[in-house]
Image (cartoon, rainbow, N blue to C red; front, side, top):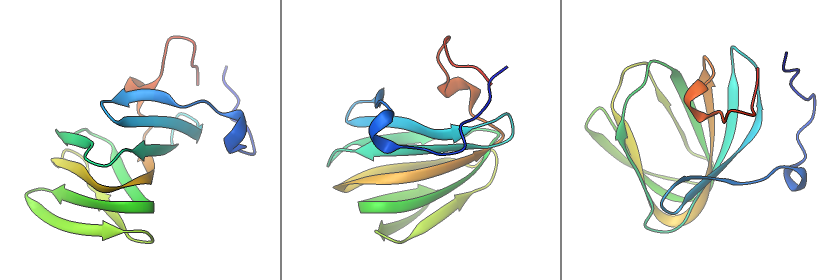
Amino acid sequence: MYTPPIFFKDNESKWEYAAEGITRKFIGYNPELMLVKVKFEKGAVGALHDHFHSQGSYVASGKFKIIINGDEKILEQGDGFFVSPNTEHGAECLEAGVLIDVFNPIREDFLNEEDDY
């Protein structure tokens, strides 16, 4: 059974490929909650998609065009957004940056075979 760490040390965690120009690393997770750091290169696109998870995202750095249910907004460092379950959303990175994403429940589709919870 996976026991989530109490602390996250950024330099002890590895980036993994998510999509073209996008990498991510887990800050931590358990069956109910997942916290993910997502790094975007300028021009990278998080394609429009939806999922049954609730999602909250915080712009740690950079500039993004965020689309949620057809509404577009430019967000910068310190801004954030919330996505209800089954709502189409996506992101285009206008200036290289990092999003901190929180999911409930855990995004099992993000886990590799060696990951556990």
